[in-house]
Image 1 (cartoon, rainbow, N blue to C red):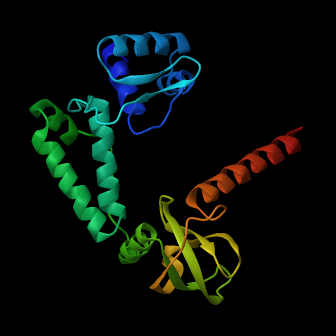
Image 2: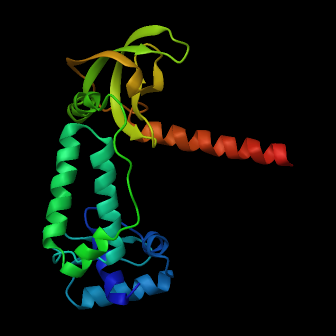
Length: 237
């Protein structure tokens, strides 16, 4: 990465965060702590409104506007591929937004980059039969923090009804799942969207409660993954 690009990345990484250490920046940018300290010093001397100090952390003062972004060819390819994946595997509203984003991207890029996209060797398969229309109301319930009443078919074929606190939608390559706090089980659960028989957004909302957030769900996934790795290593030895 060119130094000018790295300096811009530092500003982008600092933006919107309360405090970021030099070690974190060094890990993200794959350089040494000493390089980050030097870059921060140079940014500050050039007028960038960065507060903080070595050993404590840094933050960018509010109100600082970054210059318009310039994407590298690899970044353009990644954005274009991601938009095509959303267009192929998301609900109608998200597909329309992705297609509009692709159009804007293609109309604002230099001709050479547009030609590069047209010659892109990466392809995304079209939609197969899947109840994508269920995603929009579920996503809205997540954003508004409203409970959902679900009629759900379990893996063993049993139909159950339960109230859940919807936390996040996950795409696994061939299916979507809903991560949620289940009032019936009083625990985190995930539900395959294609197994929902009925769903209704309730007027009752749910609070941000410790132990029942998306971060708690993700933490439980990481812990389960770590246990699986540990068990695998024990078997090997």
